[in-house]
Image 1 (cartoon, rainbow, N blue to C red):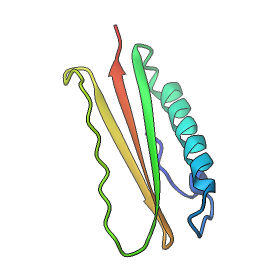
Image 2 (spheres, rainbow, N blue to C red):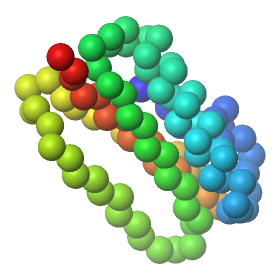
Image 3 (cartoon, rainbow, N blue to C red):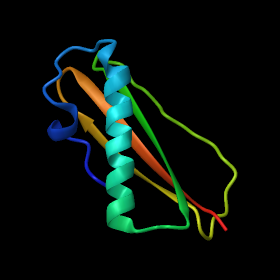
Image 4 (cartoon, rainbow, N blue to C red):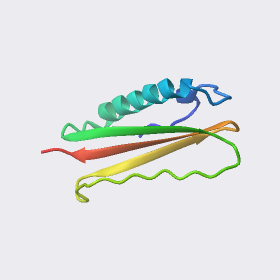
Length: 96
């Protein structure tokens, strides 16, 4: 899975409404890069990208789904600077 870093996030210093379109753009880039590098034709890839402000608070991101533990899996990556944090999760679900 590609790392979420400055090349993806740019030099954002303040949290804004622009992060909605940025998160969609980053999710699309991560999904495309995973498809190209992993060559997993029989897998459905789903990407979730979340942004937040660094305000001396904690955050927990959770997800649940029904899957086959022998074939399905996920990968995570995170990024932070002094103003924002980002979390990306890629889910790979085997399709028959």
